[in-house]
Amino acid sequence: MKEARPKDVPGVVTAPVVIYAAPLLAGLLYDWRKPGLLPKKVACPLGLGLAGTGTILGLQAAWQFRRAGTSLEPWEPTTALVAGGVYRYTRNPVYLGFACIYAGIALMASSCTALYLLPAVVALINRGVIEREERYLEDKFGDQYRTYAQKARRWI
Image 1 (cartoon, helix red, strand yellow):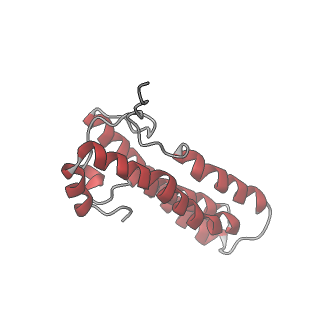
Image 2 (cartoon, one colour):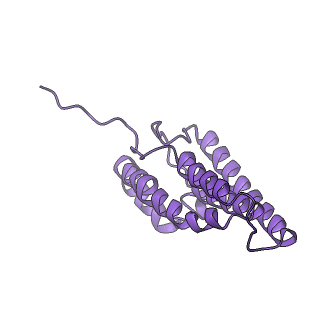
């Protein structure tokens, strides 16, 4: 009997957007109509800045993947190692962008609970997504990936 070959994918635990969205929504719902830590005059501009920064990071990352002709989706095979553009500075601009968007929305909504949940979200992304993607990329691209990983930080 032949042994089944694993698919050419990193095997992340679930879609990263779900890992970010579920706790954010839970925190927002829990804190509905509760006073926030910061006044709206401070929270809204700060939150908009963070969310805008996260959006720009994500769009730049998506553009780099499209330009390289590879999929941004972690359940699709990777056909090229993307190391240019924003990827010169961080290996995970999409996840960093999601974290910024998450924090920005939580600030704008004055949701302390959502903000308190963010470190757990980042830990789950590290463990259930990034570590798996890194193993996959190292297996697939070998020294090329290892050299890149030494030059670009995981987050920032």
